[in-house]
Length: 259
Image (cartoon, rainbow, N blue to C red):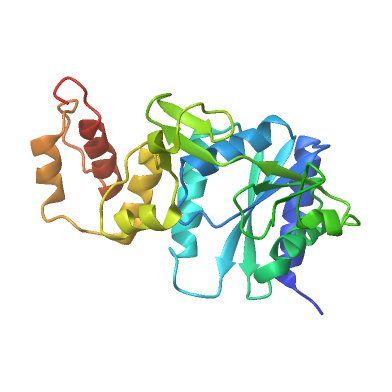
């Protein structure tokens, strides 16, 4: 059967590999619902030990999540502004019911391999990984599927520690769980769906602004008047977008002398 979208994506990947002369290609399956700081850390880790990273952005056939275009734009905002050029490519991943259940990660690995990837990064807290100890050795579902010619790299769970004051791995932080802020996607989504900007330790302000501006267009009456009443500026009268308003509002939240 002929699948033009798949062929086009393979061409895009091959073109990027040729353009960058990439020898080792990593991949991540990502829903980015919403895109948060823990995702950022995984992406940076993948880039540090590979020549090219392919992010397969899940595109399910349901309307339960953020629209695909919103998630894609938020991810692109981060990549374009905070990562080296030509190190990352986003590929839409038609995520049907087939990619669920016990065989989810096996199918993910096969797909990544067929697209030309050498490595697939998987979070250790992924439900489909099935981590268990066997003869004092950490094993997973991939121990029973060794004929897939792709390296599987597991990534620690990341949290924000209020004592370390930064993003840390649960395996390296010496402080207890009561000091940890977890990157729980459903909880972060509740804030966003109710129009609340998540704290910057959870979601980068540029990403939050991008998502909220898309979800709540023309939310404020007299936005320009509100902007100039609250925000410091250069004294120039320029029309500001919803996204710029959210960015400036977060900067006001982050002042320290009065908090």
